[in-house]
Length: 432
Image (cartoon, rainbow, N blue to C red):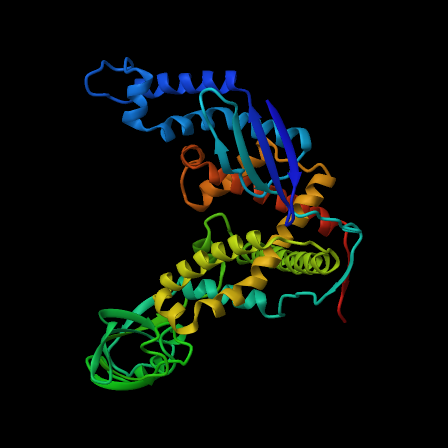
């Protein structure tokens, strides 16, 4: 067997493979025997169909594919290992010539990761705006907890006010036609924290329980549903009930309701302070990390081939489509209105940024010999189990079904370790 390697433009490599006829013929006969065991040829017992009959029944191309699937993975693996190639994608067969009495000739190609040369990644001097918790952050957190523990009191003797919750029936109309998904019965709306169309909740104030009325609103120009953008709408409302939030007194008893582990209000406050400090620390590290990678991307010249960029754009397009559809929009309608090219161009910059970040992380991990340990993976498995409220055994079972999950966990661990290294070695100046 001979393998010659030819480096092409755009980080592509061509493999010219020639396998002697004695090997290829033997593999061909072996493939015939394997296929004969798997298929039922009329008139023959399982595994007993002659080669010439099998060729007519399943087709020579199917047998040749069996041979290629058997021989080539080892050939590719050896070539990649010997030359220390860092691949972007799996090798693809460009062409092959195959005959029983001749050698097997295969031409395959694969893409290499672009070369990454980083002059400096440790000791980077960066400047960011420091995040600090506002002075009233503790009070706001306690107020938020009080809101969650508030009791609801039915109101009969007054009109609704901005801090109430109301139970309503509603139906919306645009141009006289009912809005699809724009109606509901017994919907509970918090007037002070409404995510409805601007102006909707405000018009439910100063109304009596049992009252029926109409309100008029206008859908925002950036609304996700193309048919409703900027449209005037009318809603029929029936206010079924008014409920007042009665906040608990902020004392030791309140702290115990938040968490039985707290005996006093001071213990709760200390816990909140630690949470706020950690949140501020994490936010500043996020800002530092973003600035570091922004700096590295600017200073590192990486020539990324178009194939890589196009694949990343397609991945981003898939994520964008899923997000739009989950928000209730119609991706295909949006794509038709905005134009595929416009969306493509908008995603291209993000695709290049993500690719450069990934390549830089990979290069630093290689330079620093950063690896993933079994303990790292177990920690990630435990994180997923906690996130989805399941057991680590269930997570492992899902990983066994889908190897891409394990690949994703490995990527996350490497990225986190590299990011930690960069943050710990950066010189950070906070803007005055």
